[in-house]
Length: 180
Image (cartoon, rainbow, N blue to C red; front, top):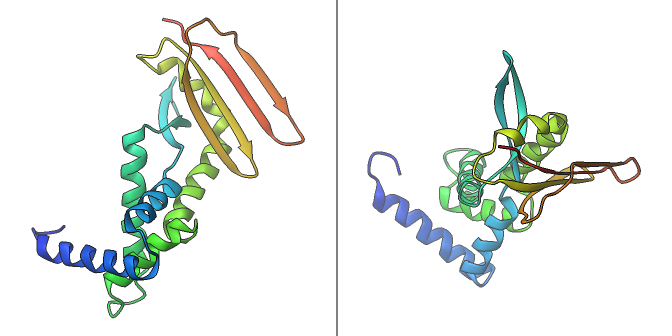
């Protein structure tokens, strides 16, 4: 919404939702699934250590995942307009359907971010000593065919630092504890 054009934005989304209801059925379920498909699991942050800046993969919080997914869908709808003659209602409808089917511009942004995080995973050890608030955690990174998943789990008992590398399926696991 730029310059307070609330009515125009409302009309665009109403038309988009009507198109979704006519073609796909349940709009709410479709939107939730589309946002779930676009949510990034990890992102790359810049961390400065000893005068050198590293791109370090880190876990994305739930709220940031959702805001990034919605932002990428809207940016994909704007970029998907071939010309100004293509309506924003139609391009946003197509981008939401593409996100639901795991295609489109927003899905490519997610894929590129995960690919970058998988390339930079060798710097992941710079991230976890700086985390605060979680005393003991395990960070499991599993890479399957180019996509990388980060999962942060709270643990109640002490964990040992363990590294496992498998060359066949590219599995990488690191479990550790954060020291105060």
